Length: 319
Image (cartoon, rainbow, N blue to C red):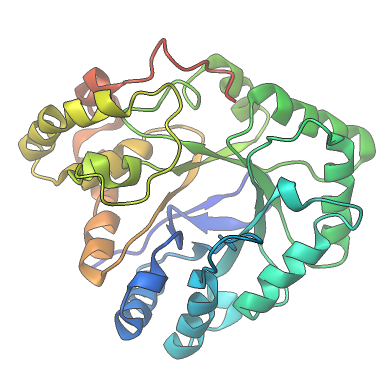
């Protein structure tokens, strides 16, 4: 009998997310639609309830429709809105006089829903923003029923602490979750002391990029679009793949399952985000949840210690 995934709270929001969440980045627009619908239905049946569905295009860039396709998948799979949680991205580059509302309403329109359960602020690359303006704008969106909770993607510990302090002073909700790169190779930030102080305050972790864009699963040919490379350590990660694969084989799992399973050992983890482009890949990834229980968190962390590539290279404070 296949068990369903456990649920964990997103920060102290009262919203309970599945242990795994499914991402849409450059995924559904390269799948057969019927296969994508079947995969979505199986994910929900297995207990996945959080779906990261962002608008991954900008003016002047080629159009991307993966979020629009997801809307069609939801309809075709016959999902009720109360069966799943929407996590949407908000980009600081587009934050202006009208706040986040225009881009949020556009994102909701493209997915065909009236609210996002969670929004994640993109990377903080602008130095002309007042963080208080962001916090208060998000509070207005919450009051309007457009969002239920919010978090940040790859922000520094100091900037997140500032958000928490501003929210407390204003009497509004602060960030509930931090989406961070977290893998056997990239551990310095989520495992470091600056973020440990945030976890103690109730912030929780959404692990992302846990397979380094497929590299840790053995896809090292460079044919896929991969995220940024903090610390310029990707060559080291690629070099580690054969030894990492041997450890996975010794445990009777695939490298992808070992990489995903590792993320579940973090004490502040709410959910691990991954993409899947087939039902078979989805099933294999979900089965990684059994690895920690079978091997033990401490032993699993010991086995993958040699592959910690950003130790002493990336500042634990974050970007």
